[in-house]
Amino acid sequence: MPEGPPRPHSPAPDHAGLTRRRFLRSAAAAIAVPGLTGCAARVARPEPVPPPAQAVPEIPLETLPPTLRLGPTPNFLPAPDLAQDRVLRYVAGLRPFRRGTVRIEHETVGSQSVVHHYGHGGSGFTLAWGTAEEAADLLERHHPAPKDVAVLGGGVVGLTTAVVLLERGYAVTVYAKALSPNTTSDLAGAQFAPSLVDADSHERLERWVRASARRYLALRGDEYGVYERPNYATGPGGSGLNKLPTDLFPMRDLDELPFPGGSRRGRVHQTLLIEPPTYLPRLLKRVYEAGGGVTPRTFHNAADVAALRERVVVNCMGLGSGEVFPDRALTPVRGQLVLMQPEPLGYLLSHAGYCFPRSDAVVLGGTVERGVDRAQPQPEDCLRILNNHRRFFGQPTAQLDRNAPWLRRWARTPHHPATIRA
Ligand SMILES: Cc1cc2nc3c(=O)[nH]c(=O)nc-3n(C[C@H](O)[C@H](O)[C@H](O)COP(=O)(O)OP(=O)(O)OC[C@H]3O[C@@H](n4cnc5c(N)ncnc54)[C@H](O)[C@@H]3O)c2cc1C
Image (cartoon, rainbow, N blue to C red; front, side, top):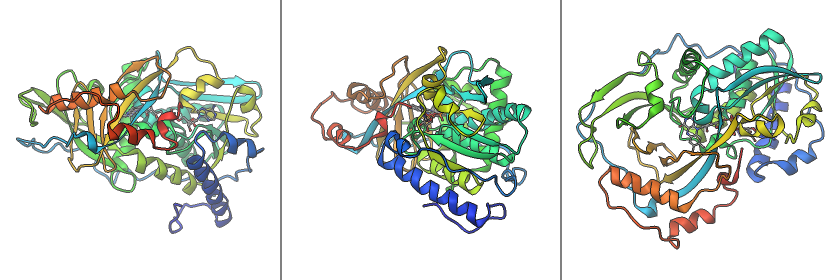
């Protein structure tokens, strides 16, 4: 249970006690019951959420170095150990891709004011702070703070939105079917790169990227699990990296990538790695520190949303948004990952797939399967991901053995996030 010494801007003790109790209930329920549906049925009405004692200031950014630094490129970097018996598990997640653009729009639904904020595709971590600032600006134009606001969804987008609104003086309750570790956000890599996402203009995307980068730069370190990493990319690999502004994310062309497995041209970007197993619980804790609350709740339709006591709502339900507020532009893009035992390699790699060594696992990706709505990993695809990386590093590939222990080990993992759709 996250607790710490009182902070200068933490809520009054009674309020903090209330929100900590709620956190215990919701987080424990999220871990025990994927989807939280049963829990939601028991919670008839949310408890009222008192407004925060005062607006929570943003983390002071001006004290931190504004950009990343790209160090010298070594002549040689080791490959990860890609032996099958080092596979921890393999997973599949559905990226909430929206054709045209991420949706940040206001609409009036009955007596409620709804700001939609979803459709981040393969860039929910990368863009969340930037799009949350824009969604909060939109909300502020319709309903200046203070005001009670319901944030629907507790993935990276919902939690980030909740923090931004709390900073601006709103009283926020997050309502969600599931929390970390049972959301799509828990399945992300998660590198800072705007890939597999549509924006209606280059300028808008760049605004989101810069605003988000500014926040993540301030969060670097073990507490949030945000780290600087060089990403080595082959020519066609890492398309989202091409959209990073090079004044913030320095880049260098390389005549030869420093890996075993053959001579290949490429480039290196200094970018950010956000580790979801650390980042998401810390972000949830930040919601509590700032005076917000969390209530488990499943919405089946707009009438369920109308039944909330709040008249102002921000919809951050990712792919789940489409079930409640139909949107033909929203479509899943499945991605599969193989998680290997961790190794401190200190770099990221983007080629025909990607390799993100994190502290919990070496994450190998990634497939791009448009319109596939089953979040079930496929053994054949996972072996393809492994073999793809073995080929890159010049190692022998393998055939699929359905009796291999690593396949059976995954099958025994209970309540696996891979079964979560949204
Ligand atoms: C394999 C893979 C790799 C990825 N890699 C990266 C990466 O490297 N970098 C990056 O930036 N992004 C990456 N992403 C994308 C990123 O994970 C998503 O963009 C992000 O998770 C979307 O966040 P979200 O909060 O909108 O949705 P979610 O995480 O899905 O959260 C939705 C929330 O809404 C709730 N909800 C849904 N429906 C309902 C309902 N009916 N009632 C109540 N609550 C509901 C859910 O329970 C959840 O709390 C990756 C995604 C995948 C699948």
